[in-house]
Amino acid sequence: MGNSFGCSASGERLVSAARDGDLIEAKMLLEFNPGLAKYSTFGGLNSPLHFAASKGHNEIVALLLENGADVNSRNYCGQTALMQACRHGHWEVVQTLMLYRCNVMKADYLSGRTALHFAAVSGHVRCIRLVVADFVASVPYETLHARVDADVGDGLNTKRKQEQSALCKFVNKTADAGITALHMAALNGYFDCVQLLLDLNAYVSAATYHYGTSMDLIGKWLPLDVARMWGRHWLEPLLSPSSDAVVSPFPTSNYLSLPLMSVLNIARECGLHSSTTSSNEIDFCAVCLERPCSVAAEGTRF
Image (cartoon, rainbow, N blue to C red; front, side, top):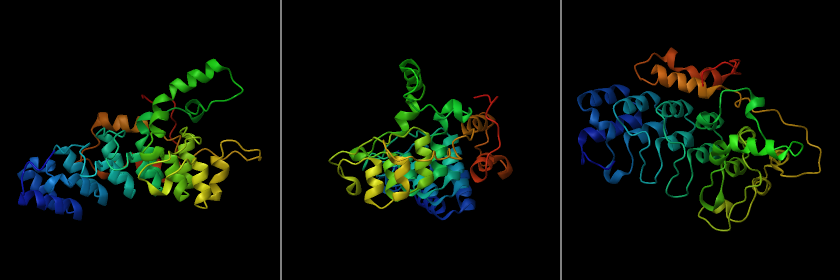
């Protein structure tokens, strides 16, 4: 939405409150005029929601969304609040935006990056796990994990590919010049992000194009090539598409088995995204993301 309120003094005050984390001021302004939640700065450069998300002010993010802010609104670069939160690693904000069913598939205008790209390039593994929550069923790892195995029949491989098509499409979505989230994580050497993306069936054979605006990755490079170019040698055993060397299997990412799809869907049904909900009630994902998860996925509703 554009700047429908003009150069509103109240709107600018809300922008300042969202940027500075002044929850009391934000509440006061929105009580007086809930429509301010849709305000944007001159020329649509940014909105209170974008400022709050980029700064990690989760309570203000929830307050703005409750008052009608568009969870999928874009700033002047085409970035959503989810992209801003993922870029800066504010996983609590990502959690709130996911509860409001933000569109994780959106890409920015400048480079075609999704929120997954922004999380991967900055090494924010918790954000990655939350962003893919609606694609990863709350089932045991062995059921979810369906890498194509050369030892099984073509029929079974075809079925596995179909079951994971939505997840694979998202995880391997390319930005400018064919860059995937795996390229981004490899570029900066984030082992835990690379590990999780591989467990989500990111393609180690995805190659960048010979053109684009992302200068660091221009050329035809695999994620392995990117890791080697930038000296991330500890990633080579994970990223090698084919290797004669005997490599010990690396452990499954601790984040993959978390039943976040079930947790998020239950929270959506119960209305736990409200800013009036007590902090003890809204820390549901913190249990999984901050310590080893012992919640059994079997028997969940979703």
